[in-house]
Image 1 (cartoon, rainbow, N blue to C red):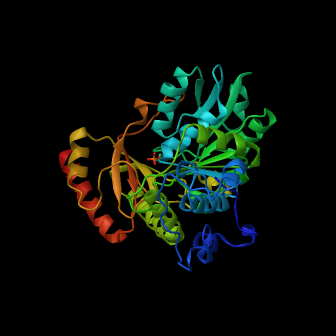
Image 2 (cartoon, rainbow, N blue to C red):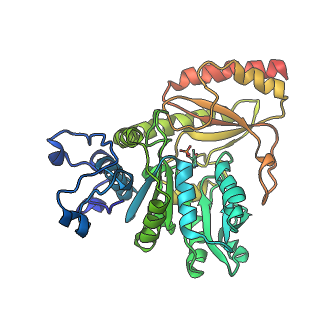
Image 3 (cartoon, rainbow, N blue to C red):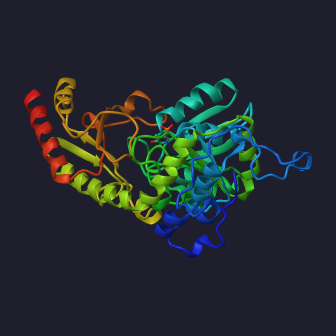
Length: 395
Ligand SMILES: *Cc1c(COP(=O)(O)O)cnc(C)c1O
């Protein structure tokens, strides 16, 4: 946990910051990259140092130079005051929520949120006496109607997991500010490269570093970044829960940041091309991708974001479970698996009607979520083209 160390990072453009944030080669014998610090015990030079508590590092659980470097980099990229790291994105969400709630409180969470976030609310928070209202992601400033005397925070995720609804964060944040409520935003889809929720009115930002920070499906990590107002509270909760990420995962995410801009640029272009191609296939009813002009959330996306990433969904025309299985089981380049953000393409079938509570999910047919990796798009089209043939044959 540390404040951004750069003198005036705001002056530099984001690609430059990705290459330089959280680095200080002069302190590490000139080596370009921060070493992987492992360890629990930190030795104090003398009794006075123990009494004065002046050491920068006091105990492995409380931070290492490797952890601090990534914290600094994320703080700088998100434009916050303080970042804490967690062993997973989900742990970052739990840490942010637990920082702000107490028994008897009520919170507002978007119905389009990442499903495990919903589980934190329904299980852990509910058991602690915190009540959640899931709200329509398209609510905008009508969120005011849902605020109660004991409401303590508003949670947004834009675009929504799986279904990609865009939320009007500035409108929601304005209402929240007028009621003194902090807003937490999950920024995993956009990364700080394509959206800065703090600048749009959010008070805490979540990133699942597991996805694009790491970018190679070989690390688990999360971050919470906040402005000055909630920094002490966040630090306290993070410390009390003894949260410390694995050193190797921190290193891999720090390394991943250096190439994130070039990777994301390719994910962005390839995903847009694949989304347009899918939109033109006769088996497809609709594509859910806010970067497409035809998407209902496109105007909000254009106003608040500077790019789109590799993840989007498709609604197919009606097809049997067997036909979907025939299509997906035979794919050679698209793996089936959760998580995303790595260099490889993925597809997963999903059904939002099974978990939504504030809104009724209506769709023409089965839904598929795609992550477009760094493969050549012509090969991806050929693989999916064969898949659509199997789908049609099995229909
Ligand atoms: C994956 C994901 C998370 C959780 O990250 P983990 O590191 O897998 O725990 C949180 N939010 C969103 C939007 C995600 O896609």
